Image 1: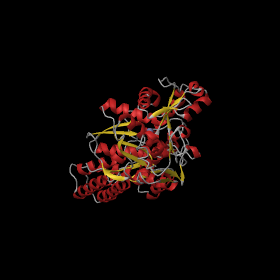
Image 2: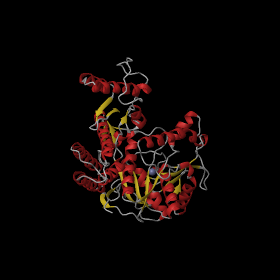
Image 3: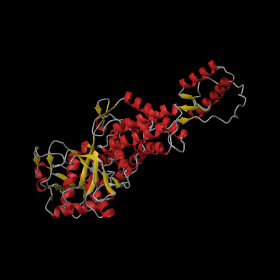
Image 4: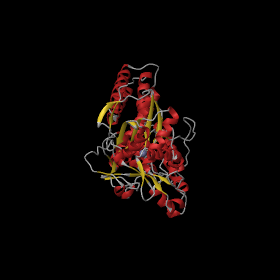
Length: 499
Ligand SMILES: [Zn+2]
């Protein structure tokens, strides 16, 4: 095992050693399903997907948990305003989240626990903290965590130089609060009429109420890894940098106070923000781009993955139109090459391909082992594409070694946009072209577009056959202007690809 990852807990790159290899328990904070998750959220999920895929590529068996926060202040407020239960309110957003995940080719977690379905272990956790005297009841009836009673508080976020505000007068019950001060936080919020109205209240020995956001992750993670493996410490916990404080700090406090373990997770990894044209992307500022917006714009998932992986996960990423256009072109280049490579496969590797594949495997692994340096891994992949195209032009054939190196790198990044070939309507080879006139203006019905391009392709084949190269070039240009690329392959076959 040579993987090194930057551990937020120690602010250092450390060798990654799971507690019980080949098993790795991975917990990643999931979305609060009160709206469509934006591309900034998905940047974090894509970094976690890369982590997951690289661990699995090493033969590790990852057990991946991602929670769905389906009860919180915002959800209760929105559900109340619409007069529906929280369960009904979140249902379409959960569905949309899974659609977006699949569109972006993110490997599904093994389990997606919903907060509202894990209330019992949450109640158990709070009960134990009350018994240990680490939690207390406030005069508002809610249960709070006393950070004074947990000396390690502030370790993850390095809060030691900040003021800790303990005690009932300085506590906080909101799910989101000022990130500057450390305060006692609510584990369990006493039920209010507006909670009851939307089905967001549960019975507990310490009073009817609902869980605080931080509590959810602790209780669900511990419950699931306990059930699955009988352990109470995670290998890796990941999320966005904005979760370090207070969310992850509070998760550690609750979990460690409950289990008595020094750690809740042995490695903490945090992904940086994504900015849209320089402004931090967040629903709160009305600056939203969701994967579904991009999909509607015809952007392929390969381009988004490539764009994200071209920046290291611990660096801020700017999403601009230019960057996206460049990533689209890059992803197409990968897809075109994959198609070419596949088509040229032989039983054995040519010498050039053997050497290039070895270089790819070595550089790719070295890059990702170095704290998931995806930009370097991407560069290694494009070096291989450049060299591979040169070798193919020179007539060299790739074999199993090249295929395996490509499959590993492509399988981890999954950033290629497959070329979309236009199927040309059946016409016997060399058959006569109909005399029927076809329009030079493409049909407005998108379903008829491929047929139109295919028809022009046949005309061009015929023009070439009678050596009317001016006409053939004119048709090539016509198709190009309408989003189709014509490729005359060396073996005489002509392909039409939709751009
Ligand atoms: Zn969490």
